[in-house]
Length: 293
Image (cartoon, rainbow, N blue to C red; front, side, top):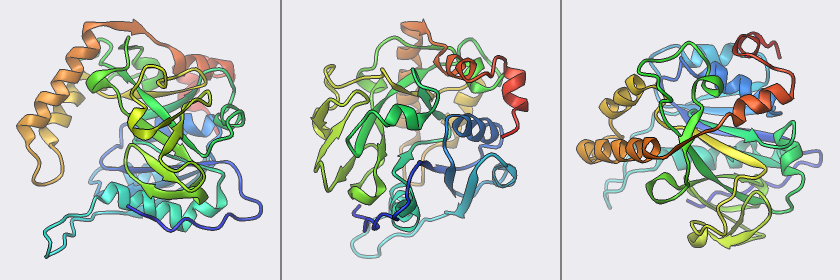
């Protein structure tokens, strides 16, 4: 989709996160808290008809500006018979209506965490990059032994991930200059300054189609922790939910279970999220949950 990128505000700066969400009451506070601690000052959350306490908890969060937008959208064209991609529409809406105030916008999901690996904030990590279109590969975490939802927050609960980023376990999410965007998709963007080219987290550039090469895939400064399965109980709930209408639920189940198998077949310990929290003075899960921002 092609948004109309806004003109930058004279004093724009910082990073905002845009996400679409539904029934994330068990996770939304931890996700907001972690990213606020990482320096995110604004969240634009597009709610796809949550029926639990997701919206209530997000509105009550006091550590940053949180904007909730109702986003239940099943609209289709009559002719031709084409449905809207409501996730990409949300991204375009955020770019056009809120992007002018920020140097960076990240487009991720609630099960994805942006983790600075060296610096004490995302802004510090991004300041070393001169490009306005950054692609971060998934780092895919499995259940880490949890059959049921653990009492621990995700950064502490899930510490086993796939060793390799490849095949079905590899895709990207992006951090972009919202005032430079010319085309938006879930996993890739085009920009005025870079065209169809994106940069990794150390400044190496590649065409969007060539990002899957091992020479481009990088998680040296910022790691995108994708807590893909959460607990096994939550994974099977995800399978039962299915995709939006008209999806092939059985095919989706097989793809999810394939990813689980690939993650668990070759795992390594990864405490990067907890390491970041310790680096900024948050040493335990209890301290994390009680942090007042």
